[in-house]
Amino acid sequence: MTARTPQRSLRDWFPTAPAAWALGPRSRNHVAGQLNLKSCELLHPAVARWHADQLGRLAPAAVVEYPLTGPARDAVAAHFGQDPARVLLTPGSDHAISLVCEALAAPAGRLVVARPHFDSWSRCAARLGFRLDGVDMPHRAPMDTAALTERLLSGPPAVLVLTQPDSITGQLCTREQLLRAVLAAHRHGSVVVVDTCYLAYADDGEATVQGLEEWDNVLRINSFSKSHGLAGARVGAVLAQPSVVDYLSRWAPDSMLSHVSLALLERALAEPEVFRTARAEVRAARAELTRDVERLLPLWSARPTQANFAAFDAEPDDAARVHKALLADGIRTRLLTGEPGFSGGLRVATPSLAAVRRVTGVLAALAATTRS
Image (tube, rainbow, N blue to C red; front, side):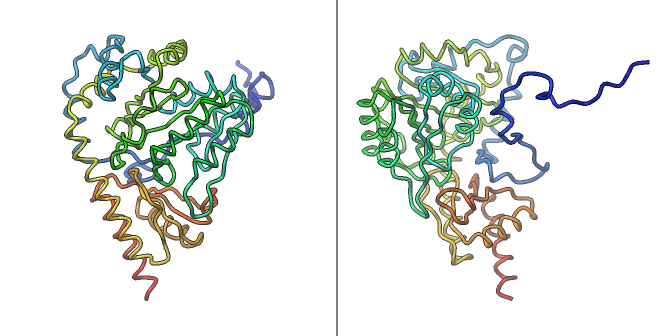
């Protein structure tokens, strides 16, 4: 007979990372069939049909053979008008962030970033032990890059994160604002990371980052999850000077990419029209949602956005009420209440006109109930 082993917590009997226990478990579990307007994926029907067609055309080699990353890297380089030596592929932007944190922020000991921000930055800081120097977004106001630069200059050289456009509000910085921050960081001996995961949805977005890659202290992180519907494929890229790419490549992030992901990325970049058309509808849906929410909920106000979502300021109780009503109808959104800059608020992705009209249908019914 085998004796039953008592259940013990791992940290009670084996060395673990103390900071990890302070983090909440992170998982992507939600009810099947829900419309996920929280994660800002490109849930556009035409994009889904395109990927279904491409998956059906993949050869068995895409599964049974290890991938070669060169062709996909060259395609990404051509997409951004860069030399392939300036491109490093990664398994998604989460891994790119982890790579930058381990290779740069941890040795420097400090990372400056706006709050709120994508939570991978906080998780990496806790896991790797460097200081996350957060700058709170002003209440109901855009983040000022000058405030981030001032915080950077107040301490030793560090990593400065600029998200273009912002991943919480969709705020787009001007090229001049970005250049001033890059120049100040260069003089300070600091690195600037420009996260452009949402930039494909901005009007003339590429023009705002044009030329930044010429600075040796600038790295660009780009995901293809938002722009090309590759969230499930987990593929992204870091763009930087060749010497920086050479250093980061020692972590071999591209070795973790699948053949299927690379094949889909190459094909997506080779057929841009389907994605341009889908993104145009996303921008139209964003404008429609903004207009209809402010009409149906007069006390709500939309933040200016150039991403694939809209963020709204609202009273905390009202934001919670709407969030709950949408969830009851099977629609997931992000509640912003209590985040820096928001006493109350909600963020809603706009992947298609059909998706946002489902949202406004719920809001119209809610508004009618409130009036009665």
